Amino acid sequence: MLVALMAYDKKGALDVRKANRDAHVAYLKSSDAVVQAGPFLDEAGDMCGSLIVLDVPDMDAANQWVAGDPYGSAGLFREITLMPWNKVIG
Figure (cartoon, helix red, strand yellow):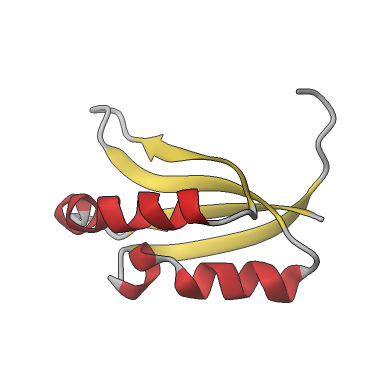
């Protein structure tokens, strides 16, 4: 199943994001579950959240993936939403 992971950074957490970015990107690249991934950008063009599309067997697997993300361990996010997603185009 495809799952959209939408995560929103805590205010003022850009330094936390930058400090953990290499570990986060390595985690993305090491995972067979990641279909697409990239940061949300604020008005200034700075990273302020993440959109990741996962291909996982079920929501439990999506939650396990989130639990292993270095950004989560660093306390970067103020909110994370996991939503089943249906690819129509692309």
